[in-house]
Image (cartoon, rainbow, N blue to C red; front, side):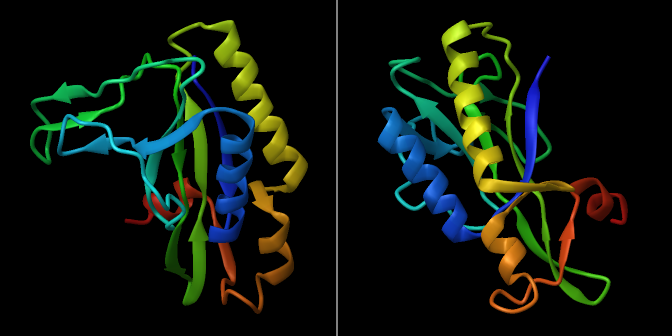
Length: 167
């Protein structure tokens, strides 16, 4: 069974998160899906709304995309669900009830690989987030809590299910 942590974070929070990961372990951030079979590191992964794989090379020395030949958007490549990789989806800025809002993102893993070392690493990542973020509707960065009404112009933190259920 998969595990996830829902979160709201700003670009600065994402940069701190990725720095923590890369300082602690040999981590590469890669696109979770791609049009191409070759995995390429994303140099600046903290753009709002993107979808990445956090690949710890000490746990998995090599990684290859699975080819998905049939889908609504056509053929593409993606990280295998069974790989010990953490999915990172960043929030999306939207208009919500006539206010600027941020849909929550998440970290997620399916845990199909059942690797105890991966489970330990995933728990380290979750503990870092819980230490740096505040529990609200999901986990919200402290910086976002302080600046929500001013600095970034965001007036609403939107849980993902509420936004997409309105479409």
